[in-house]
Image (tube, rainbow, N blue to C red; front, side):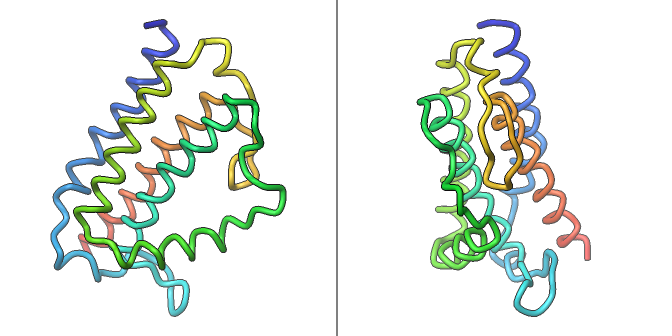
Amino acid sequence: MSDRKHALTEYMGAAHGATWPVLSGLREADLPRKAFGEDESLWTVADVVAHLADAESGILGQAQRLLAGKQTVPDDFDLDRWNRSAVRRGRGRSLAELLESILRAHGEALKTVEATEDSAFDLTGRHSSGDLLTVEGFFRRIADHRRAHTADIERALRS
């Protein structure tokens, strides 16, 4: 494994190692707790977990499309609309299903990193947020996104 791949898998592994104990330690009683927002924009802990389950595979898919020479997201992609829809869809899934989805996406991301040629990590494409990222940036975004939302969950559990 190249130094670049090693550094990237270490980065992703560190994020997983820091966040997985929090996520896998959630109990059903934690899920209705308010994570952030108000009224119609309120997200509970369960909503954040559902969002992570969707986003991890979604960002991975964007990176994989970029690697395949395809458009990462449609030009008219609306991230806020997508996130609202993903959270609604996630409300019908159990905590175990959501966690399995996160774990599966993490494993697939690591496999994709391993299979990627070093030169391809510099390809750039548009992330669903509108940001231009390199392939490496997409993988780092997966890790950073998980860390940020796990911090939201931890704050909710403390309140």
